[in-house]
Amino acid sequence: METVKNILEPRGIRNNNPLNIRWSAVNDWNGQTGQDSGGFVIFDKPENGIRAAAKILDSYQRRGIKTLGKIVTTWAPPIENNVEAYIAHMEKATGKNRDMVINKASGDYVPLLAAMIKHENGKQPYSPALIAYGVSLS
Picture 1: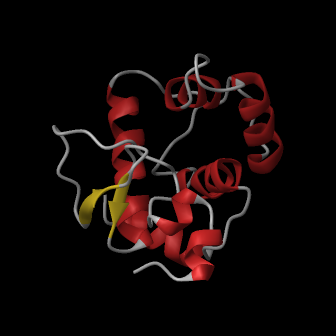
Picture 2: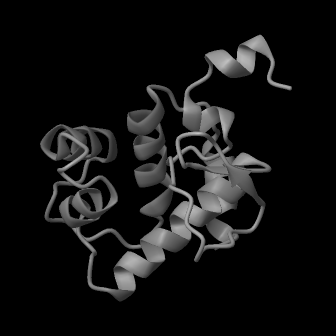
C-alpha cells in the first residue's frame, strides 16, 4: 500500500526508477518488480534503477551514441520531450557541452545520471555515492 508521502513523490522516485525507464517484455532488469499504470518499470531499490540506466548508457556507447547531445536525444526523443531544454540542462549541470564524449571510465556517468535524475523528477535525492554504487553494478 502506498503511503501519502510516496504518492506525492515523482513517479521515478516512487518507482525506484529515477531515470523513468519504460517497461519492456524483453528486459528483465535486476530488481525489477513490475510496471506501473503508465508503463514504467518499478524497481525494488533505487540503485537497481540506476544500474539499469547505466547499462542503457553502456549500450548507447556500443552503438556509437557517445556525446552528451546524442545521449539525451536518444534517451528523451523529441516526439515526447523538449530535447533542446533537456540538453541545455545537462550542459549546465555537468559542465560538458553537447558535443563532448561521455565516458564511463572517466567517471562521467555519475554526474550525468545525477543531472538526468533531476531533470526527470524535478529533484535529485540520491547521494553521489549511491549513484556511483548503482553505476558500479552495471
